[in-house]
Image (cartoon, rainbow, N blue to C red; front, side):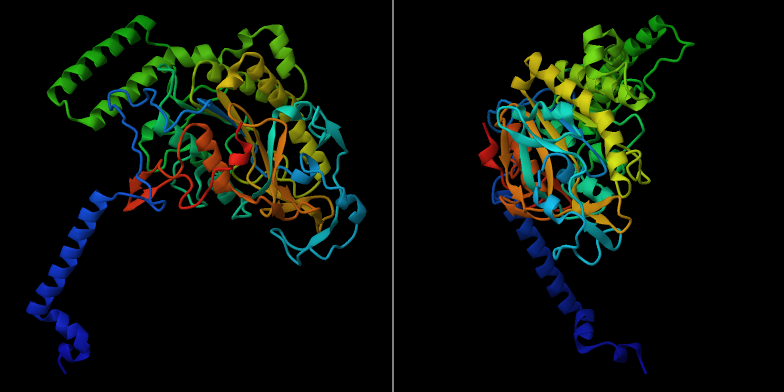
Amino acid sequence: MSNAEHISPLGRGLLDRRSFMQTSGFALGGLGLAGLLAEEDPTGFSGKQPIRPTIDPHNPYAPRPGHFAMPAKQVLVIYCPGAVSHVDTFDHKPALEKQHGQKADYIPKVTFEGPPGNVAKAFWDFKPRGQTGKMVSDLLPNLAALTDEFCFFHALHSETAAHPQGENFFNTGFTMEGFPSFGAWVTYALGTENADLPGFVAINDPRGLARSGNNNFGSGFLPASFQGTNFTAINPPDNLKRPEKFAAADDAATVDLLKSLNNRHLEKFPGDADLAARIASYELAGKMQTSVPEVMEVTNEPEFIQKEYGTESGSDLRKEYAKNCILARRLIEKGVRVVQLFNGSDPSGGNGITNWDSHANIKDTHAMQAEIMDQPTAALIRDLKRRGLLDHTLIVWATEFGRMPFLQGNGTGRDHNPGAFTCFMAGAGVKSGMSYGASDEFGFKTVDNRTSVYDFNATILHLMGLDHERLSFYHNGLERRLTNVHGHVVKEVLA
């Protein structure tokens, strides 16, 4: 029996030369037509024309105009990995006091880490704060005192209950890795006002990176120029320090020689954009050799600033985080476009010790994290306002999801809750003293003005003068964007 007899009639037809040529011709013609139509109407899922930033390869970090005018020109993201419990901080639920210790009918049989326990009221007392009388717990007394400055989002929900995916989703818009971070999108679109510092700086926790590591501030498929530069108040960027065996004069002479050689090479190949971008990256690194050590000198701040932030009191971790907060303010002062400040770490977990992931002993572990985060963060916000920097700086305080209104089976911790959590914004372009949306009476699910992470990110981009539906990058046949094919601007919170 020949091999041809094992092939279906359809398959034998494809082996015919005339049929093969006909089928190939139709296929190639269809691809060509699709390409021509894409050039005529290169719209994304929104039906809107993408807006491509005009980037000079010789100076990819140069400031660029937004899509429309908005007061926010810079953004400070304070990110708390591990999932801060909303029902113990900013989302007051008196109904939990009535159900405390009981099995409620809304409790599922199994949650993220196994069988649940009973309902638990907040571990800290809630009190009315400021002129608005907003109820905030005693866990964060310093931030509570600033309640009138904040715009709370109480109806946030996530698509995942896992930390790595949750961090990815919040910071890149996708649960998978490999997508650009929020900071990379903003600097890709807007560049930066400071020519001597990176446009996007990630200040990681003194204990290390968060669960998703560099992905939280990576550039994904955007040009590498726009990834976040990682350094803290005590740890400078890698490979920046001049070796001690080389004198400063020798180093400067080497830089001048390289610049001369690079310019000569660019004259020979004027259209080589990749070469120009690479040279610009090296030139920025050269400038950072002097600019970064200067901005890291937080010990030069006056005594009242050190005391206000708490660099000389409290736990060692609080002192180090306080120095990072001062560094964040100094970077904003210098015109850095995006600063992402992390409070919490540990790529292998944490269980409330190195981040907010309190599956056990939440009263102790959340208190430990609050001692580190509360005073320095509140001081940072007050300091920015005092210096007039909030007129053009947007502050975003965020975490990846919330925690359950009932305990786990161990009776001491709260499990992950992607169904409802709270974040807040403050500063340029946002209404102050406002609460938007609501979770149910137990803080279990959102019920009023449900807000997705896509909506939250779309609103941040809008406040920065960027249309989230038009800020896109063509990658692997798709117009990719931070909000994927979703998201709506929450216009009710705009000042």
